[in-house]
Length: 277
Image 1 (tube, rainbow, N blue to C red):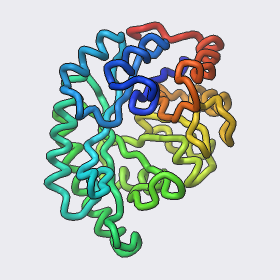
Image 2: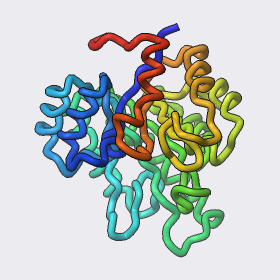
Image 3: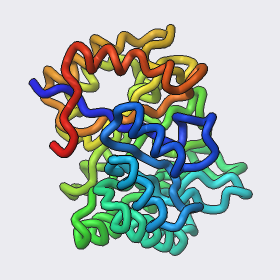
């Protein structure tokens, strides 16, 4: 069984450092071989690519743009009336992914519109999402890229997010039926919405293209106090033959590097993956 490979989510880690280039440098120094960025769009793609190269990192995940942040948009994939903006955002994400050599793009579903009842717009939003995902799958296939769907919990993090359970995401992926669209398993969100992590991981891992981790309920390091047993979960992912990356998307409770003791002890036990493999 191969040890898991970890990527530093530099949108979350190293908040003590001002910008993405500095955070990438710090991630490389901390021993990471890979990084992910939620929204890289404030930096020119070439500048970011050279910062990642200088840090010895490859980029493994970015998100599609949020949309109009002032209006509270959080992705556009399932938002009625925003199909054109979704396609423009996808084009921008593909441009960045190519410049960064990044193979995966999280296709953000977005939120139930303000003032609308979820149950009343559920059907329309799913129809829009399916249409946008079919379009995206075609665009991504031309560039040899993978699109990911991530359920985000509606209990703590984002009460109006459209895509909130592993089952809902898996059902949508099945309806779209494109091999280059996969599931993004953020264990933090899955635990809050559905629990049953062992069963859900075993059942859904074949369609998972990326994993993210944080402790529940405070979203701290996997080594911080909380309800998840990460040594067990990491062993489970290994036993099930997971080959992708595990993104560290959590809120460090103190200094980021000190907080990485959980990862250093994993590397001590399992061996640090050699660069370039």
